[in-house]
Amino acid sequence: MATDLTRRQLGLACAITAAAGFVDGIGFLHLGGYFVSFMSGNSTRAAADLASGDLLGWGKAIGLVAAFVFGVVLASLVTSKPHPSVAATTTPQRSPRHSPLGPQLHAIWLSVGILVLASACATASLMGVQPAEYAVAPLIAASMGAVNSTFTRGGEVSVGLTYMTGALVKAAQLFAARLKGAPQTGWLRYAALWVAIAAGSAAGAVSYLAAGLVVLWAAPAMLALCAGLVWRRRRL
Image (cartoon, rainbow, N blue to C red; front, top):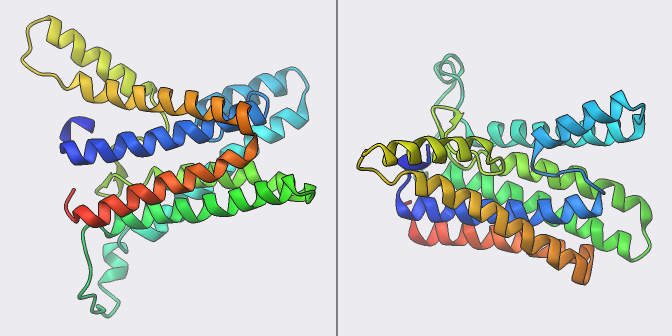
């Protein structure tokens, strides 16, 4: 939960969420109303497209959902510890440089790597390699799925970074509690996450309209900066 994060962790979460909003703003305009990080919206689009007989649109929406899920699965495999039954039957390996920051960094760098590949495909498409464009959106969606594994606890995502409906609900609930006299300001943390994704989406949309798909390169740069800050701080 956002209320359990330190200030540095909250800053990292907001920075990643802003980057997710940035690519979602780009993707929404480029794909004509589909999302690369907001899968609830794609699920609604898929249902609406299917009901209206638009099988191509349905396939596009479902494909993005599948790519997002693939990214989550891939990140979970990279960041999670082996199941106890498996760990008990394997020989422990030495990892003297192991750090509790490892899972965070792995999830972020995995997302960066996928985004770099997506950006490279976008650049190739702009240079005339049209088939490369078809890989851009699924790769971005996979990277957004992967980055959601940055904050996990007990194998479960503790803070969602690319979907803000739950954050808005928590912000509203805690704000209502504050109005009733509860001495807490936790609602501001959830509100900050929403502001981050909204601001990032606006920046992505404006950048896309100004310069086109090439601005996608800014997204892996943002996340790489986040990873660098995590490594520098060592303790978040």
